Amino acid sequence: MMFFLIDHSESYYKTIAKRKVPSRRSGKFVQIVNYSTNDEYLVLSPKEFSLFHATIAERFFRLKGNITGSYNEKKDFYTIQDPDWEVIGGGMWAIDSRKKTLSLNGESQAYGRFSDTGLKEKVNDTEGMASLTIVIDGK
Image (cartoon, rainbow, N blue to C red):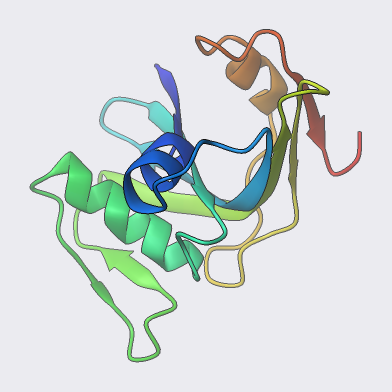
C-alpha cells in the first residue's frame, strides 16, 4: 500500500494564475482509493481551481488515464466507472507555510467525510511534508 499526496497548488498558481504560490492557501480536497493496489490518494486543489469536489475527482482520473467516469446533471458529482477506484470522501484544507501547518476539516457534500484514520502519519511520511504539523478538525 502506498499513500500519495497530490497538491495542485504549483500547477494552478504558477501555470494558470501566473504568480508565485502563496505561503497561505486553501481549497478543497478529495480522498481516493484504488482497491486493487490498496493505494490511497489525497488530492488538494486551491479554491480558485475547483468549485466542486467532483471537479477535483474528474481531474485526478483524467490525469491518471484510462479511468472513465461521468458527471451527474448538476455537475457536482463525478461517478467512476471502474470498481477498483472510489472517492471515499473529501473536505477543506489550508496550508500555512510560515507556521508549517496543514489543516484538514469538514466534508464533501458529494462524497461525504474523509477518513482520518492514520492520515496525520501518512501525510507526514510523504516527501516534503514531514516538517508540517497536521491538524484535523482543529486537533
